[in-house]
Every structure is written in C-alpha cells, then in structure tokens.
Image (cartoon, rainbow, N blue to C red; front, top):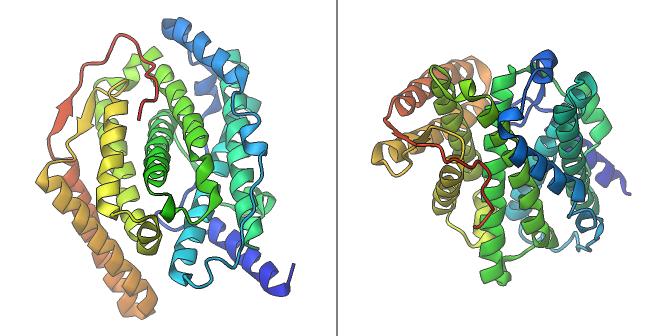
Length: 353
C-alpha cells in the first residue's frame, strides 16, 4: 500500500472517530435493566424469530467477494467523496451496534437477551467487515480496533436503546431496499458492486428491528403514557437526521439517478408503515408543515456548516444562534399532530417492499 493510501486510511479512521452532531455514536447502557426483560407475553413469536436467527440464512452471503477498480470513480471526485462518506458513516454505525450488542451479551445472564445480542453482533460484525472490504479496495479502510478503543462512548437509557435501535434497523431496511429496487430497474446507475448485496443485507436489518419490536410489545409500558412522547421524539430525530445527512451528499444521489427528497419521503413512508407493528403513533410526513420544517432544518444545518468553515468568534456566535433556531424548528415539528395507531394482534411482519 502506498504512503498516500496509508494517509487516506488514517483519514477514514479519523472521520469515523469524529463526534459531529449527526455522526453515528457508540453507546453504553444499564445492563441490569436489560437482564430483567421478560419476553413471556410474546414467547411464541420470539421462539420462531430466534429459530430464524439460528438458521443464519445469510452465512455464506457476506463471504462472497467482489472486485472493484478503485480508479473508476477518479473522474467523478464529488461522487467518490460522497460515496466514501456514506461507507465510513455506515461502517461506524454497524460497528457501533456490534460493540454494544457484544457488551450487553457479556453483562447479562438472561438467556433470551444474551442469545439475541449474540446473533445481532454476529450480523453487524459481518456488515462492518464487508464495508471495510469495499473501503480497503479503495485504499481507505477504517481501523476498527482503533475505533473501538478511542471512539467516545455515550450513556443511553435502555428504553432509548429500544426506540433508537428499532428505528435505525427499520429505516436502514427501508433505505437499502429502496436503493436496491431502484438499481434493479436502472442498472446503468450502479457504480459499485456492493449494492448487489443490499437485499440480503437489508433483510438482516429488518430482522433486528423485529426483535426490538417484540421486546417492546412484551413490555407494553414502553408504549404507553409519557413514553409516547419519547417515541414521537425518536421518530422525529431519526427522520430529520436522515433528511439533513442525505442532502449533504448530493453527488451520491445524482450518481444513483435519484431525487434526494423523493427518496427520503419514500423511505419515511416505508418506515412509517412498518412501525405500525409496534408504535401507537406515527408522524404525518405528508403534512406541508412537516415538509417545510424539514427543509428549514436542512437550511439551518447548511448555514451552520458554512459558519464552521468560516471559523473565528463570529463564526462560533453565528453557529450558536443557528443552534437555537434549529431547536425551535425541531420543537415546532415535534408539536405537530401525530396519527394514532391501533397495534395489531401479531407483531411480526414479513418484509414485502
């Protein structure tokens, strides 16, 4: 590997270590609370799901290798930069899940939870390794051992882990399957072979979300009373983060031949439909007020980026003012009416998108 490649690899690892507002994070939680979880109310569906995990249907899928000419994107530097940003963000997120699930398995005696965490860590480890294969072929692999040791960890209450993990897995499924179906229809936009793996990949994400849906349905207090306010918060936080982050990669979606806004709202629609299996409320993403608010959050984020690049005292003061405006905009979105949802008798839903 050349000196330039080594430097780039270090840059990728440094990018993964960054603690930017929208960057994936590493978490710790209250393991004792997880140890006390009881899945008895959903035992039949739980055992069926765990049997599916044990089959490990994708065991051979991520062992397949692909070849990629790392120079093929050199004439499209903006696309290459956005694609690398996507891969580094994705590997950080996948590996974050792997580390968290390994830590939970290590700290609990509850067999149901330990078994689930072992299966999920297995899958996330495969995903992270597969992304790193793509990065390595481009000479910019992330050092996962450094990431585990040096990434800042944040404490998250168990119920926040449930809400956030469920949504990240389900929206991950919606994102991957939407891109995969689009490239099936338009193979001329497939600029990297990794997208051929997205269907099985997203089915792993979907299955992980099913597990957390069952955990919440087995403990219905998580879905009642003031916890509905937390569900509303996490729905909005996940949707708005995705919207802002996706629009920061315009060359990537141009490379896909996709309109970013149309893509995001399609993903929101799929995620909202899936989330009716467990959440008693959903967001009305078709509300014009919601869409105006999302666009305002995007413009404020872009303004903050410009002020960060400007630097200095005035830049810092400007960013502080933008942060206040963003918080007020988020609050306005949070207060929009939600849609009530009656939970189905059976929790698990087959992926059909």
